[in-house]
Length: 188
Length: 145
Image (cartoon, rainbow over all chains, first blue to last red; front, side, top):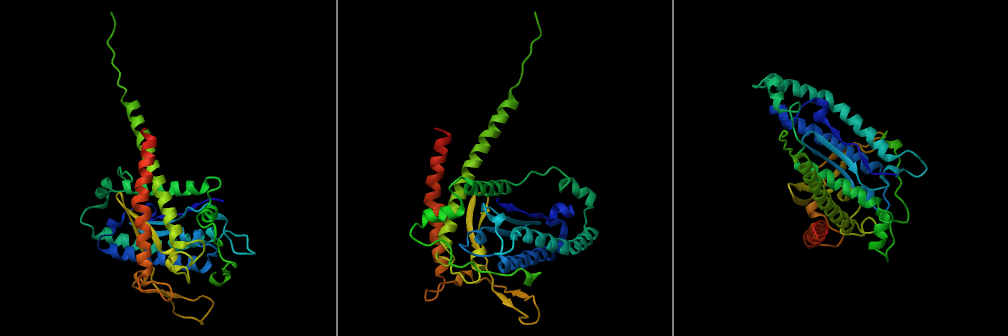
């Protein structure tokens, strides 16, 4: 059992940053917004909810060309539909990869159009772009450190997500009596 | 008589500085992680709908996240309505996402409009205000006694 992080960096896949899309930048951002939304729909369709902890812990957002998909809860890789041993996180990872593969050709086309229109030759621009020296932003460093710390906080023996709830709400039932069941067959 | 040799210890100093910076980053990240976990527990409660977040589909609960701009932390919830667009026309129901978020209007049945936003703001203020400050003070005191 562990946390999961299967974020997808379209910048690496395309060898570009969002600014390289020029006047097509908004279109590229809309495509990323679309896959983020569709993945969120899948998540809400298939994720079983008991306490809601692991559902709430999903990070699904786009910043630049990076699509962040991660969850720091310690048992998230283990979550599965009752009667089915397949990890739902793995199903959602595959879904994210399918969605990403689906928009890559369109993103490449947009990028090619932007390159044709670019006033600065791409080879020259690259010196300061992805191929040049680029340090990770302080914001990204801090964000990753917080995710790692959140993951570590759940890994401390006796401090897992459910144990935390029991400590914080000692007189209340944890989770619901019946887990909401949802079939993944419907969405395949 | 012999040569004069002077060595710089700059690489060792730089390594110490990196280690110190990493320790401070880890400490600060740990404090923020604790604050965000406690804040999310307040939002959620011991089970869906038992905290300050109304729960029906899970959309409102799962669309909230703590964002970071520089060293400023914010809570953002951009839950937008999901509307089945071709229900009954096949196995897969296509869902169209609404354009406007309803998070600012969300409330429990019988509660005032916007109650969720007010409660979330109060919980955020609690965990990312005084409690985070106290936690950071304790952690820094541990690093530099």
